[in-house]
Every structure is written in structure tokens, then in C-alpha cells.
Length: 215
Ligand code: TYD
Image 1 (spheres, helix red, strand yellow):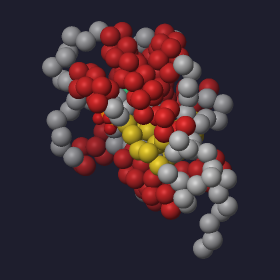
Image 2 (image 1 turned 45 degrees about the horizontal axis):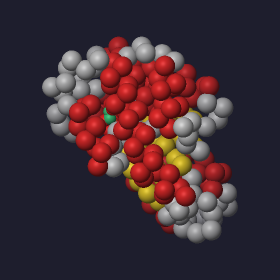
Image 3 (image 1 turned 120 degrees about the vertical axis):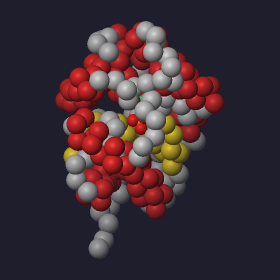
């Protein structure tokens, strides 16, 4: 494909349907001829996946908020340099499950670390932001109800946080979207998956300059 690759991130809390939408986005963009690289944070490369294990291990209850923030940022720096930037340079479209907005929402708003999170991440990413971000908007309460219906995996360290933490994260995302100058598209994730994707597709078509599809 002769079009440039884009850097796209998906954000959203538990039960927001991120994984389903990532699959749909990938399938659609590939159908349109894009070369898509799906990836995730924290993780995406061997070093960053090891940092992920450390961060999410439920046994690490003593982890300080600033250490947590720096570990997420370290994983991101590695992910960006080793995987995301080379893929974009090769004209691929990168579709990442979470990026810097997650840190601002969870560590900045959730943990209450505030503006230092954006600062640290500017260093980690050299200011690189996604071209387009989808925030799958579902209230933490509704998300949790959905999640419980879907699977019964053991909760990781972040998922074990109290409802008040997840509410602050949620409010953080809404504030971030307001301030993002249109980069973050807020999508109503309470709708059926196909309706959620229809909204996402409109934004993708705009970004990629695809003509509206017939039929
Ligand atoms: P993951 O299993 O990938 O969860 P999800 O399916 O919700 O994406 O775990 C990632 C967890 O880490 C999730 O609770 C969000 C949190 N997180 C942060 O707190 N800060 C960050 O910068 C990132 C990338 C994730």
C-alpha cells in the first residue's frame, strides 16, 4: 500500500470490549490494503513483557506509585524504540492496545501523581503521540459487571484496585479526551459490538482517506 502507516491506540477500562474492537479494526484495515501491526502495553517486546510481569504481579503490593509510573514508562520507551517506530518507518500501521493516555489516566488521575506523568512520558516517548486514539467509553461499574460475565481469570494488581480508583481513572480519560484537540475519539462502548465498530470505522475512513464503502 502506498499510503503511510498510522499510529493508532485503543484505550478503555475493564469490560469495554477493547479486544473485540482491535480485531475488527485490524480485519477492516487489512481488507482495505493496510499492513497492520497489533501490539499492546505494557509489553509488546520481550524486555517490556518482563516489565509487565513485574508491574502486574499481584504479589507486588509494596510497589510505590512513582516506581509503577516509571516502570510503565520504561516499558513504553522500549516498545516504542524497538517495535513501534521501526514499523511506522516501514510504512506499517501500528495498532496498540493502550499507550501514554493509560499512564496519565491510571497513574496521573488514579494514583494521583498528576502532571509529572505526562512529563515522564514525554521523556520516555520523545513526545511521540498516536495519530488517532479511540477511548471505549463505559462506566467502571458497567464495565466490571460485563467483565464478570465474560471471564473468571485471576485479577491482576491493577484490577484489584478499589472502585474509587477506577472511577478516578475513568474521569481522567474523559478529561484527557476533552483536552486532546480531537486526537482522542470517545466511542460509546455500551452499544452492541457492531454499532461500536461502525463509529470507529467512520474515524478510520477519515484518517486513511478511504472513500465510503458501497452497499
Ligand atoms: P491488561 O491485562 O493489558 O489489561 P486491559 O485488558 O485492561 O488492557 O493490563 C494492563 C493494566 O495496566 C490495566 O489495568 C491498565 C494498566 N495500565 C496502567 O496503569 N498504566 C499504563 O501506562 C498502562 C499501559 C496500563
